[in-house]
Amino acid sequence: MQPLPEEFYNRETTRVARELLGHLLVHHTAQGTTLGKIVETEAYLQGDPACHAAKKMTPRNRVMFGPPGRAYVYFTYGMHYCFNVVTNAEGVGEAVLIRALEPLEGLELMIKRRGRPKPEELCSGPARLVQAMGITKEHNQCILTQGSLFIAPSLEPPPDIVTTTRIGIKEGVDLPLRFYIQGNKFISRK
DNA sequence: CTATTGATTGAT
DNA sequence: TCAATCAATAGG
Image (cartoon, rainbow, N blue to C red; front, side, top):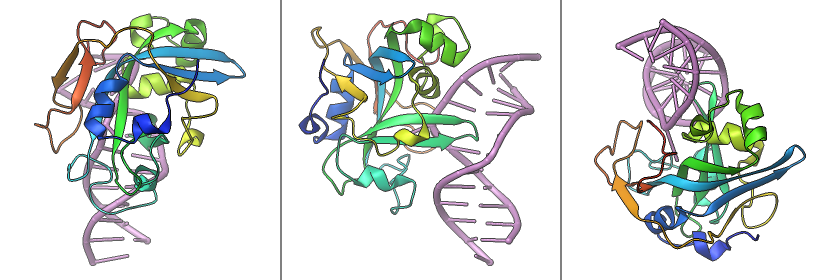
């Protein structure tokens, strides 16, 4: 199992967001390995008011302007972290938020980290999957094309994709930038 | 320096 | 529907 290459991420962000669906987020740690299928994503673009990099470069959003294939992990609501993949060319402040996974491996470890047993509540939400996968703020800026946290290609054919508007934002609410696998039971928000 | 707010979650 | 909880950000 090998990581997707940088070229995968160095493309139009909406395309990466769609093609990420079905691929596998993997994290090897001392505690063990957790792995889940990406079933829901959102794109955040330049010129998009909901994007953290919409205005100027700041210490927080800096990594979004860097090379593709890096992690952007941010803290929000005083208690949660969310995980994004930096996309498009260096200098372009865009990223894809991973919103939900279908847990496939390391379920026991996920349950231990989450403190909750229901499989459908393990990774169905951006802050939930971060907790279940053992992703921390230390992963911000980490290189996803090498190392212990990465995305591996799916072994299955490309899934059917549903396109909708994004969740939880106050601006850019009408943009069709949320994508999920049709019929999947592990989408965020029951 | 101060005030506001948020790409959420879990409980009520 | 609502509280929890605080770093980042914008403004003075």
